[in-house]
Image (cartoon, rainbow, N blue to C red):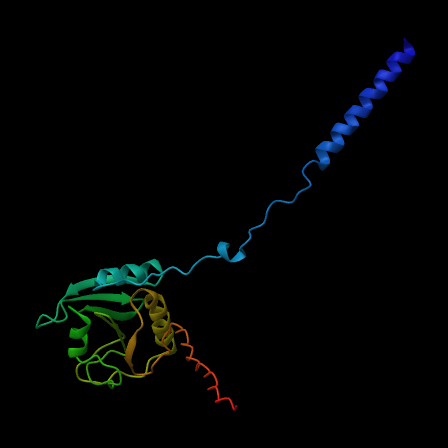
Length: 204
């Protein structure tokens, strides 16, 4: 009986050992990896707003980005254009967001590339679509002065925040800043199709 018990005990130990080995090595296959690594990368989201933009939307974008803006008042142009003007403070700087009825109305109001800064202009004037943004003081009697380093940095930051939504921007500024640009894919030049050689008449 003692020999039988010893044999049964050895069998039990062998069985446990086999089960343990199977449990440790039973799942030796590594988890499947993605066949296309690029599929997991995030695609660039299009944030651009189509159609006419409301000044309050611009204010919301600036506030959401953490710029120190707060609303002052809302007005309109004397002759119906701009249809509304939202007066804001960006930190210590005055900021006016003008809403025109259309991009054409913006051009007709004199906001065109290449125009020079004159009396009554703000230190920085940016426009895109139906929106014109004036940053810095405005005085109808004088040409705006050279901006401080802080005002230049504020202009750069503001345009960088707004450009994905309503850009690309144009500007008329005392000290122009580098505007954000969207890379344009190069158009490949058409390659000439090689002509097949004209068969020469065979001599007989």
